[in-house]
Amino acid sequence: MKFEGRLATGCLLAITLSAFAGNSLLARAALADGQIDWAGYTIVRLAAGAIVLSLLIGAQKRQSVLPQRRDLVGALSLFVYAAAFSCAYIGLEAGIGALILFPAGQITMQVIGLTRQIVPSKGQLAGAAIALIGLVYLMFPGATAPPLLSTVAMICAGVAWGVSSWAGKTVADPSRTTARYFVGASLLTLLLFPLVDWSMFTGTGVVMAVISGGVTSALGYVLWYNMLARISITSAAVSQLSVPAIAAFGGVLLLGEILTARLMIGGLIIFAGIGLTSWASIRTGSS
Image 1 (tube, rainbow, N blue to C red):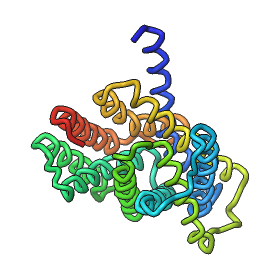
Image 2 (image 1 turned 120 degrees about the vertical axis):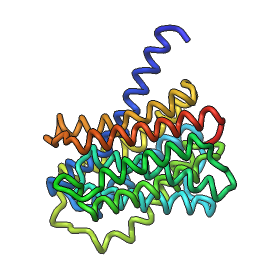
Image 3 (image 1 turned 180 degrees about the vertical axis):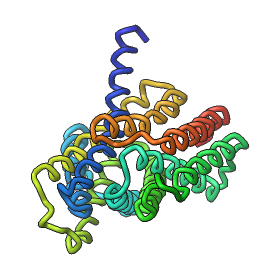
């Protein structure tokens, strides 16, 4: 690959990873400041993502993005992820939320692999154990511990994200499948309408949810699939480690959050665990 091509790929990768971290920053900014309630944020985010992906994928491939029976698990888990994610960010700071979400999703995918007789290597098991230790340290009771209910909600979001990621892992057309998941999840948000606090709706909150769903989620996923065709599996796995770090530092710079010792130590332990898991997965050629 020529220098210009490498530079373009690097820029697109940075934009993609920043978009993923942006989901945490946007949710925290909207929900912590009371610009919108969690149910409304979830509805708008998923609807915006469904609309953008339907227009984009439908125009490109001229194929239907209506969910099918085989999309039920992916759509349902995406809905649970988005709802739990919104609930969690009422009480969690952006960096801590991302640090909880990421290992929860990774560990979930490893557990699903076990149920499919995909036995992890010693390196993968060690990495998952280290990441879990970091997660436990982050949650351990103390003056700087994150709120328990919000932490549990984010763990649920991570588990649901892991299920959704696994559901779409082996499909032939991940972009179109993701569009169907978003459409299905947006239909499921009808269940949330009785829970919406319409008095909390503000223009700022709605705009943040639209950007999160239509740009940092929907377009972020499309860019990510494009990146996977350009970079090695090693680069893809390692690059994802930067997402919680971007969210953490973005929270400090943009939202005035505090970079605590607990966040730094817990984050380093989690990064080490996820990094070891990714490295071991690449070496063994497994998921």
